[in-house]
Length: 211
Image (cartoon, rainbow, N blue to C red; front, side, top):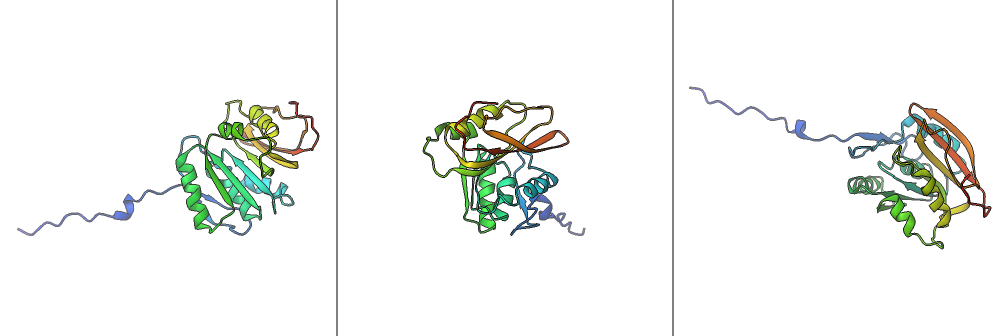
């Protein structure tokens, strides 16, 4: 009787493939980077990022950035690619921050600080004399949790914003108006599907009551 050989195993089929995000512009244009599959993690779509960074083209170079609820890090990585001085990435998912470290190492980038923490916890722990103060903030909290007003209030109270900081906020499109500090002025907004994204410019006035 002929010897039966065991079936061949295609080891490549066992490899897990992670979803990928693509850097839209700048030094790392078209680079693709993996991000973990985590429930609720939804990188800002390419088209939205392209529009956003067209708005920010004169602001991003040299900016100190804060990427709250960083997730895949798509916004902060895009900013670094386009010449931001530094980005602080905040996320509470260890898997997300671990992948961000791997991606920054892959890009040979040393301008990113990665902190594993809930955004509110991190903000509440800041002192009012905290340095650095951020020029550009990306705020993409979980939808339908009503987190935006408190996050914005803490950014002001903890003195985390430079005098003329720019704040980008993604929120569910049914939320027609956001409660933000009175010295923030909405500059631009656009809706894409279920997401409305807005850009606010801060003035250095002392008035910070929600408006």
